[in-house]
Length: 114
Length: 112
Image 1 (tube, rainbow over the protein chains, first blue to last red):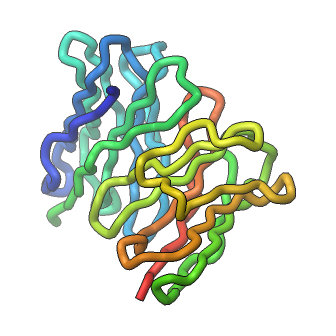
Image 2 (cartoon, chains in turn cyan, brown):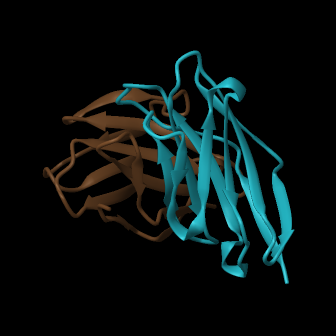
């Protein structure tokens, strides 16, 4: 079954530092991959998506993610963290060509230190 | 990005009562989804709905749950007899053109 694993339930970085949130997927066929962000008491907002086009995907708010088939990874990065980036981040997978569900990882809470 | 409006934003109910959560997409969509998120936990798939039929459901989606699109616009999730463990945020989502989902703001259900 398709799944994603997010390493680290909580990541803390200083303002201005690099943000790296890790996600590995399990699939024999490259799936569709997504990163969502959830701010406190809000819904899930799509940050970016990988759908088998370019392996480096740019999203909103300065985030990007790189699909690496050899490592089955789809890590999320941002060069310089802002205080407003503090939120919960979810990696998610959808089986290629499936019209069915997206499966979410367990989430990583990102904290930003002043 | 399509807009999804969910009502109510928060509902408090007694155990054993029926609850109906509503989702209104601004534009016409064929694919709808319900997810739930128990406080502090992961986002869990409940059910997907395509062309007025359930296309897939999880083991969480037992006989206590049902979904409908009663008037071609609203999309509802009904919980017939709520349990304490049904307390969660419930999210409606619409399917996008390239596999992504667009979520509403959620309905918080508190079962006492």
